Image (cartoon, rainbow, N blue to C red; front, side):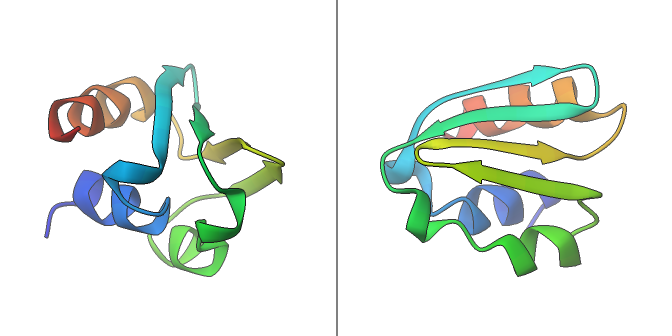
Amino acid sequence: MSKPEEILSALGGAENIEEIEGCITRLRTEVVDGSLVDQAALKALGAHGVVVAGTVVQVVVGPEAEMIAEDIQDLL
């Protein structure tokens, strides 16, 4: 599985994603159910930090955030 596929899975899968975008070093994501987000898996994949506030999830992945977001959008 590619890194974008693994991140998508850790975010609860394609059916859990409402919107995702890259913003400098973060993936800004709106999800259907924040409880499906596996923060430990995201950190194991190299995320520097994960913030979940209800249905809004921010994953700090570094300068490749926009590329990862585009790859995840292609998977949706």
